[in-house]
Length: 365
Ligand code: SF4
Image 1 (tube, helix red, strand yellow):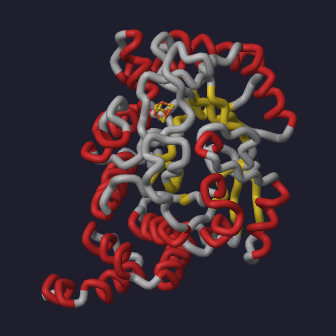
Image 2 (tube, rainbow, N blue to C red):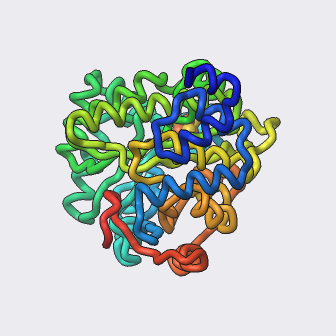
């Protein structure tokens, strides 16, 4: 009977489910994304945000994105940052440069670094472990580092299994893993936009192994390239399922979900139109509603700018990401918003929230 009703009135039924906090089906999420009014989505997602995080507080971190190398074998079609190995504009950071960047981060009150790089043909697990040991010995800071495609690549370079690779990286100082390189976790899309990168199953397998070994991670989604609406929802479904598995083990190892829009400039897909701010807000809101087992959802001021990031705080986001003292990847696509700590605080306060600095585990600093 309920199914028959839903088939006749899919939108009211999906909105009712979202309003009551019930787990959304794939079909309900797709209906909301395609058909709900924008302001209804905002209202529903904000109510869900307040159920998950009832305190009137918006959090942010102080950190820096350090890209150790831009030389990359993958050549993703959506990426403006990489250079092929051996390219005149290729670089690999020296330990001294790395150390200087970390010291600057610590001096600004940073709690962690987000350290990532291209899939360099010579950089495997052992080279990365040396770098992590150097950091831990000389510049003590939490390392939020790599991404599942990097872990897969590094394990291949050194002929290791994924669990072995993660175990060694952890022992060398890896503290948590950011959810980069997810794009859309559907292989049809990955083959079109990132054919050189690990597949959806491998991405999820790295995260499952990391969770199993006690590492916390985030999850991301880059949308607005060649995926369908159903594929976006399928991406969310795979993340929700993995978080369910982690929760069943008493963990819940995904701390946050971070969606952002594909930035086409300077990429091999530059002919595609960029996603609009409305697309972004709709996707953000449906993510908050569908991922009922994720504690936090981040706004992306890096791709959206201050105004839409602030609006995102009324569309399900409870966190403004970080001050990102340095960011190179989105900047390579010609988008370079900069927001100092004072501006992040103002964005939150102007909406009636208190602003609070957090660490990588979302604990107050
Ligand atoms: S997104 Fe990452 S893996 Fe893909 S080309 Fe850019 S640096 Fe390489």
